[in-house]
Length: 304
Picture: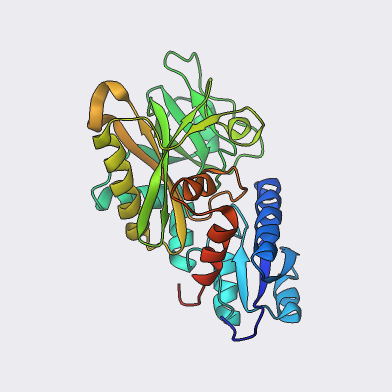
């Protein structure tokens, strides 16, 4: 961080990924909060000229509010390392590993964390036949925000009809029934657990449309499950080599107790509007949105 009186923060937002609209919302909210905290802020919509625009803006630190490919998969992080501009959230390797769902799942499994069976398959094969016994889920291997997720129910007559814009290779994983739980890790500590309550599948609309879901935070769940979420989230953060904040999502089948708790994935750049899951959790432990954004900026560095 620079020694100038008012540090200059470049907030990266938008970008070319399927999660562009979510990133625009996150970036604008974070930029407003950081201005409220006294930072000089410039907002940069990430495009092919990003390196030149960063060189022109000459920020002291970059707040990475991008979501999905290019912004969350190590690409932007590598550019920032090359330019020696301190930046927020995870570094090159952890970002790439976390957004690759299959490789991150293998990392979790090696760390003794509970995951469901999954495999990578060609989209053409997935359209042609059941590559796994239903129920199962089909999703891109490297997108977030429930973009392009297909649930194939038990007893389905045929395989899913994937849209033409799905990638050539997708991840197919066994469906984990139960409640949606999530835990944010900040530095080296877990904040709390949220129970995400929806009427149906927790898809893109449930995440981002008004009334799509409601959040019970802290979650009203048995202490052993609560404690396990907190423990697993920190272990997942550490196994991937994450920095700053991350958020780990779970499914919990109440009928199976602790055996029914499954780790789904870890998000290295969680949504950051004031009502998003991670800022909600920070508020519950006494940190308002502005202070949360300030902590993320003050944690920024190179060599992450």
